[in-house]
Image (tube, rainbow, N blue to C red):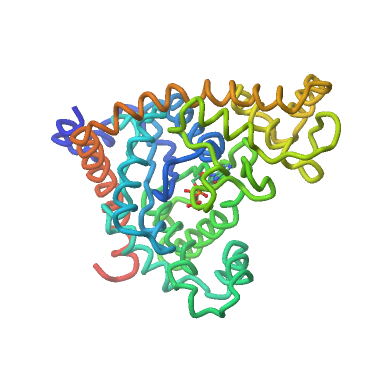
Length: 363
Ligand code: ATP
């Protein structure tokens, strides 16, 4: 019972564990739509694995980062629905709210408070050099008027998310490595200025799975916010939908099957999907497994490759989709899980904020 857990204060539960806490793992996902295959293979599957491999000396914290989601304008009704669906999805993939702290970021206002404090230390020059910001500004044809301050300071909020829980390890995709380096430097800078042990300095765990690319534009990554719904496989898609989306995946007209992401992005994406969906989650970075798979499939038609991808993806998605369908109907269970997660995260954040307030002279 999640609510009963709250009667014993989580801070007490944590501090009375026999083993001292050695690791704190934190990661987040934006509630900007139903999570897709890329989110799962690139991030969420690793979250569950970390949970299942960890003992009580590791604290796991996973956040639905709704404050990050509003750096781009969101329709309030959609955001409300996506928050609920994203929470149900985290539970459907196998995260257990009694073992992992799962919470909505905006339920813990201390994240925003710490962000402000860190903003007073962060250099605008450094933030302006962030690749993601530069990508956005170079695409912006109408000048900077439309670019919001929240998008610019996104890495500061991300640093606050991580540092406020004394995080030691952050599992993320390659795209986030630069932001994590920023968080490390913010922690080291603050510790140097105000007190050596205010923040733990987090390490990055880069996900072994490569980026899953869009099915309609294999040069771009699969994303929740891409306007074409056929570009992504949702973790709620039916068997037929998955088959149809993969059947229509953009490839090329070159003979044979080869793993060559720059030259043959569509076919290589299918090989990556098969490789990772068939369970080779921990390897694949160097592409040798996918190349071996291409050799095995050489001579087969693209139809056969797409069917094999559909079988592998359906085997991954089927149990998740079924569990999600049950959970999304259980409003009170979802509310309880969110409340229990918020409670634990608030306590964890309050402990750090006490240190921060003392360090800077607020208390
Ligand atoms: P949005 O389209 O709204 O920006 P997103 O699909 O990019 O969302 P995020 O919520 O920003 O997803 O990211 C959640 C996690 O999923 C991150 O760790 C990110 O690195 C990972 N991720 C996102 N897209 C992919 C992808 N196509 N392949 C592999 N990992 C991905």
